[in-house]
Length: 171
Image (cartoon, rainbow, N blue to C red; front, top):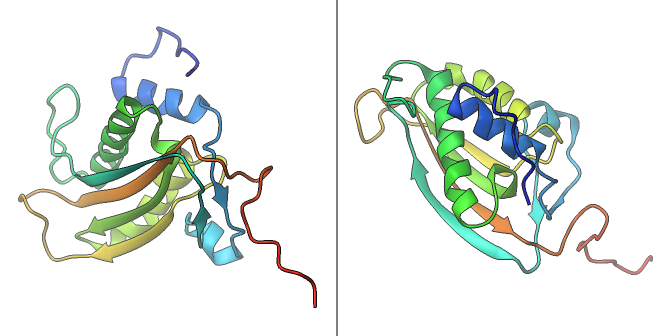
């Protein structure tokens, strides 16, 4: 069960992200990251066994929950997209922490570093999804700057404490 967020939260996005980040760590095994992978906020691989798999359609956002325009605002669009992903995964019994892989499409490569910082905020425990970042010339609707699709696994059997990595015999 998710902990309740204090009613003092004014913005729905901030409250949802706070609730997602306060949740217990997702049950999946995140493979050890080298220095570059940790700096860029992605895991080289995520191991799962069992659990419910949720295949997420690409998410975009041109408005926030209050209907305000996000056109031209990369950071606001990225945060709203993660919020929408979290909402979808909540309906399946999980949250954004259950993402095991994601493909991110951006229209300007200069936004890649800002995306990395946002991912570090969202995945505070360092259990980052496997990820690809792809620059495209355009997205489906004018004004969109980012689209994220992904795969989440909810209720998995693997974790750091319960490794699913094969135990090869020593030679």
